Length: 302
Length: 302
Figure 1: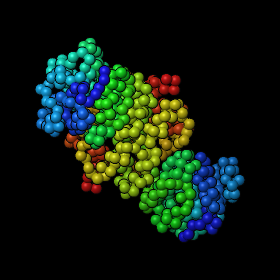
Figure 2: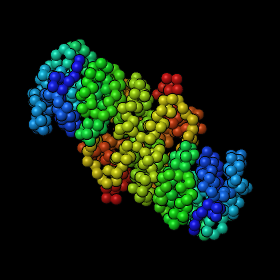
Figure 3: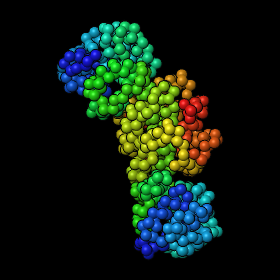
Figure 4: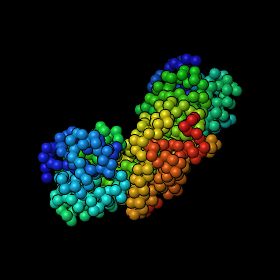
């Protein structure tokens, strides 16, 4: 299989916050693109750039050699890949279907097997880096599936990401993303608790950051989410409700594998509390509001 | 107050893993140094470099303008500063006593007040960076006390550390260190759980690190402790039993301030379990063994 702009016909399903930038990069690289999204209006900028609209994921697959999808929840993935109007219903032999949604590793394996039975290739390739990473084509892409297919897609990966790593057989991309989310989730508890402690101890938090951010306590989350928490900026780069979904997948897989993950379980509970107090559509850095609430600290108006 | 090598007489109490390097840097900068340590043999390299031995903290204070101490537990700090043979019993008016042990913020305030009543200055200045940071004079030093005294000590701070930040009134250095430890403690749970998940999911952990270590999931702990965990290197850079002490201080202070810190509490419980299974004198990265044990994973011989 040889992937080449101008020759290979690509498809893209899901043109939300992440998808619109990623699909845009593929067009900019010179690929022709068929697209479908639940909300057609969100695709308009891509149609203006020359993408062709299709009425279903099935129609996209019929028109494409390789299709990328990034949708919301595992139920959406199931519908888009395996549903009556889904991609597999339209894909011809040799087509490659790539799921970039963060979804269940076991569903990735199920899709891989179902595709294989029709001589179709399936790849799981969730991403990390958020809306900014998508915009700057700087995503970390974690990839599972057949290695030769994954390698052949290199020009596409490079159009969208910067850290592109093949992790192994089908499902390995999703598992790696779960490792990533476990790290972020548990680390976020620490960032929130540390800032609340410092605030209640009467410290100047910006001065505290000078002491702690570059040493053994340092992390991407502290450096990037810490200042947003301090500045009461809870705009979503990554939605709380999507993060709860991701943690749920990781915990379900961990339970299946019989591993106890008390830190991740605590993180999910705290995020559920955050959602309960009305912050499901805020960014994940809003977690500090749930922890503040537990100790009756009025963080926003401190 | 003017601090100058060749004129100012310094003292140093506690020449363990950290103290021996820190005191050595002060001698190398040209200061004369009186020293005391519980185990005299540990001071021999410093005596060979020209330091003078004293028989008690009190005697060190009698012979010094400024004394630094880095000992073990808050009880040791109390004895070394406030005991019968302690520094305050020997310090003359105008002497500066600096505690670099990670200890209780409230004890730092108590020492500051007791010192002030004798016209002695007390400063709390715990450090982060471990044995390597001490050796390379690259410590982060978090400082509380009277600002003019802290400023006057600049030549000494610079001899021992790289990130030198004045955090505010007495106790603020210790509070900042608690912020630092809260970040590390909670983040360490995530590092361990992420590696265990990846291992049980059948991923190659070194390949996983390529995907997750430089993005939003990245942290100092992941980059530095992760590889040691993978390589079964549990040598102490920082002892589990000291970390449990630090978390105990932070949790007690948080309770006093009425803040609930569930992540830090969980971390301490997991470290207590690690100590219970025989790893109190290992390095903090051994935490993965406690979490592995909970799920009956034989991490060491995987």
